[in-house]
Image (tube, rainbow, N blue to C red; front, side, top):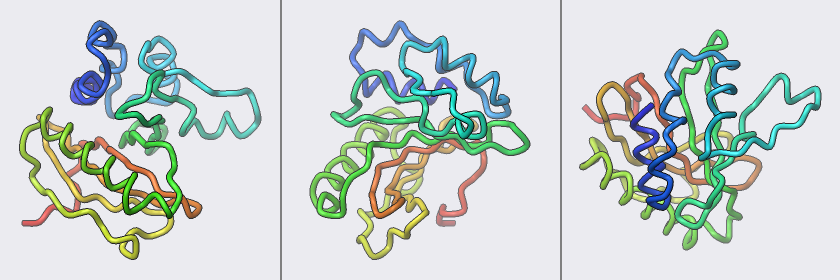
Length: 178
């Protein structure tokens, strides 16, 4: 996923430019392949333990070794038939009181950085009001396309906590306006 590494490298210091292991991830990779590739990455650290639930789910086990835009991020995976379907880069959680200032600033910075990398967004929305961000879902506001991949950014809400999200998928998102 060279488009994913482009984003990471722009977020990180120039010293990270030599670390490109993450760009070996591909849609369709199985769980073991993903874990092997990430184990060799200098960009992420695994927080995986050996508990019974860890064998069933590995979302959030891989975190950026350094903050990105002053925030910690973790990797989350949508799998279908044990194959990578979509990759999410999720920020640390924010409380509802941080929604109007801290999270909005991060949302703006994320859109600006992503636009610098992938140029003008195919769709660029406004910061969603809290009432439009639904528990258990991600509300995307921006969409870019790079080669055969769509990059989406927006805000998510889970367990009453908000987060910034950047998602990568080979499938055309249904949020694109025609």
